[in-house]
Length: 289
Image (cartoon, rainbow, N blue to C red; front, side):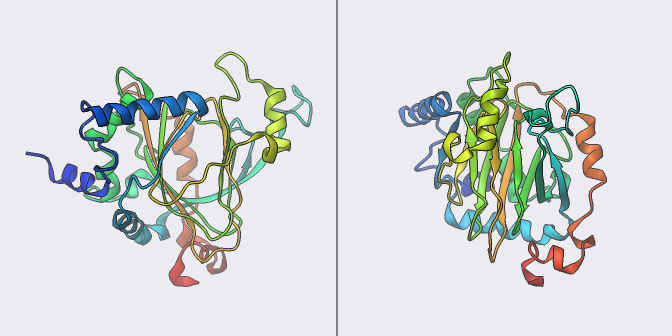
């Protein structure tokens, strides 16, 4: 008999359109094959309407009370997650170019244990789907209490600056789009495991409108993305009555994968939204607008 949490997770997904619970059937095999083909061709596979419309609403409603305790990031970084490299590279080298990085984030331990977001993340059916799509022998939900399961929330002026991802499989679910801006941009397979291709990175950073893709993503869309080799960002959110909200689920081929200690240490130092001045936090907390 399925666990209650598994039943709840399955109820969020449009399994008639996307039969993730029946991957051994012809329809399930076709779904996996199409996802793999999309990842191979352009480093990204999007499944619009993966979540039912009422499920999108439920997940937003579940997250909204958690927002006052969401941690707030307002800094700058290079595309390589560190500060500028300094004199070992020219000033205009990608290793020395820093970009604004600003958003709120609900982290893993803040989600309720019996909640829908966690049920979906830990649903074995979804993990198996992720494993097959990424073509891995094994796949596990990562175990970090901070960033295994997160929700990034971006208000007016916020942006998730250019970067690469650090683990195998990043899966996202857009839950709420802002009225303006907050668009996902990426350059597929810009680097290789042996070549950073800095000259191509420079082109993307200078002229993203010419060298980056901007897929159309609607709330309820599931996205598989090979972000470890594909430079990407979220453009600044424009004028909006509601923040951008995206759920990020992190998986890895290793059951013992852990994010670097510095990730958790950095999160522990961040202020919570409720600690910010009212004018600053109101763009995330709709009740205070």
